[in-house]
Image (cartoon, rainbow, N blue to C red; front, top):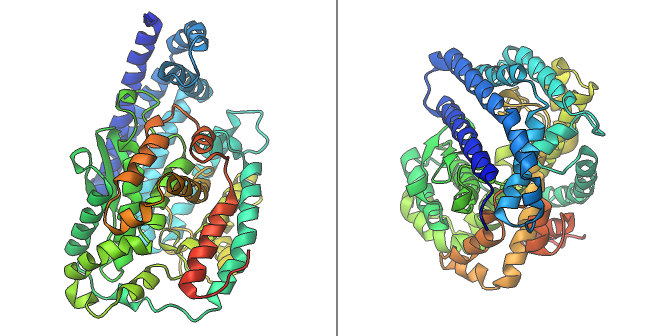
Length: 507
């Protein structure tokens, strides 16, 4: 079939937008890794300029005319055909972008850069007062953004939809309520047991060896360093500048062996998703993970279901002991395995165990909704944060650094839609892993042998390659046979931690 000339022109325009977006991503990466503090003001201005140019190109009426001219061509194709998916996703993006004024987009870019700069200095200093005026402005901009999309049931819905297309606050509240109902008794039953001794993780582990071991692990998992690299940052993240340049970051605590290691595996999970997208999608809106939740399903699957499993450490623990002979020679595999899976009420979301982690996310999601609804004022947020931690996790932060300042999301982005993807991803990770096991029951033994190609290939075939060509629910249904389901995830937690703590955990 001869391609319509309008499709060729549309792709050319989309490539240009993609290149500009990747340039902005490069500036953001630099700001969060190597940029000197003095560059913050200029970087904010540069990102605002790029944001304005990008947005003006996104809303160019010529794109609207091309999409309309391609409507009959799109309808003539099977929905799964790449050109049909490209036109469908490009139309969705165009209709969303045209609702946002260019001046607002530029202001938002500049504010986010300035807010991140203040947060990056305020958190180490425990200076919550410094960020509150910026957070007030972020909340105002978040509400303005939501108001550009009338017709939603809840003010948070447009923000959630940006990250997890098709999801709504009402649906997420229902999912989280079901999950919380299963988690609370699970946490209580486990934390009533004698605590696991994890002191072996808190000896002195030099940074250089930690980073080298982490690189060995993720290279074995399948992260392609010919198309990526790793650097240090205050808050680990993954970013990409093309499908052949997908970068990750980590942070190192020399007295916490798990911190850098598991954040490295986590970000590599994100990166392998992006590296596994169909190469032909490069330069188009399809060349990205389909949602925050699906992305987190991969980071959490590799970090937790694989990286905290016994078969994984049956392979890697001798290598870890060889890397740190003085620190781990007297530590058995069983002791180490139990230590990295210790359940405890803790303050830091990114370092929380599998069982309590989602309570951190649900708490943040609730606070986001309250801020957007106007039932919670920014000035009251730090203390309400402390109160929710006492009630939900039975522990209170001693300061703001490990309280309301700990996450970058509200200080480098909008308020709303920032956190639900983490828990949606946890839920999906088990559904996807279970489906992979049904197709390949020998995956656990392969993991114990240090072979990850079968699992990675299954994820590439059933998740990665689609990029945004399929939405989250479509991918999940095709791969697992059902939509989002909390119960397999709860069953996984009960089974794993019942065995680990030697207790019978009731459903």
